[in-house]
Length: 400
Image (cartoon, rainbow, N blue to C red; front, top):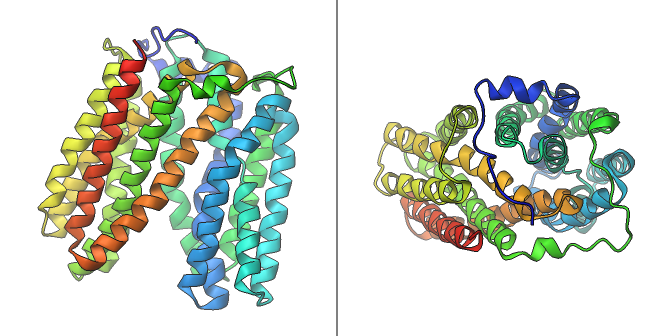
């Protein structure tokens, strides 16, 4: 396995140095529309299906099929990308995704049975290109074994955070002011445009794997499996928080604050991530990983006793201090755990672990909140943070 040395030891003005890397500005900015489009896609499906059927149950079923297919098929698509290269495979997956979304829209507006809508949702989710994994692979290709790589991953995390703040607002505005299908059309258009612009940046794309029989055994390394487990724990955290924050706002007769309250963690995370990536760190990444997730666990404790929206807002700011550094460290440790030939797959497996955790966390917290109070849902988030912290200790031990 490649050695993990110096990746957190970023020099001064590290972001400027990262963006001065040949071709970096081009592929970083090219992917921006696609990042926003991907952040819009799931909510766009909800607007589309509910607007045509009037059923949140149907919308949830289609969105669930979409999410499960994305988590399962994403690593398989990434395997093809590692083998044949981004410039060859990305346009294929983009047009397959656009066709699947067009099929879903057509079936929805024509009143097709729910089973057909779910099947189309599965096709759309399974073909959604993992743009974040592909740009992360480009950063690694350009900056591997340099102290700038952690800053590059922090910059990538920041851009994804911005996309997930802008995307949901944009899709909600477009779908509510226009037709229910408008959000899905805009999301897919942004993914298509951004993805094609990224594919056009050939000089920064990692080299495809030469051998048909390239093994992915590196993905079975215990350190990387621990990272996947940690991301599942973080997914559990986010899934339970989505439900719990919404339930808390409704229980306090302030349902309109659900969105702003949930965004507090993301907003704090954006600034924390930028500050983290710009600083020169001496502690080794494995130890930082454990410290950050221990901090996340401790930051969940005040949520167990909050009783007002203001108190909740203050408490929700604390986890944001840990989330962005976690994302950067997770990418750094994954990059050091596998060979370059399977790097896109590695990043995609982390995303899939997070997606699976979110689905489980939302389901578990939802059932508990139904029979108890929203604070019990925050207890699920605390338990998820404990799981993630435990897995981070396993990652540290495996790195010795």
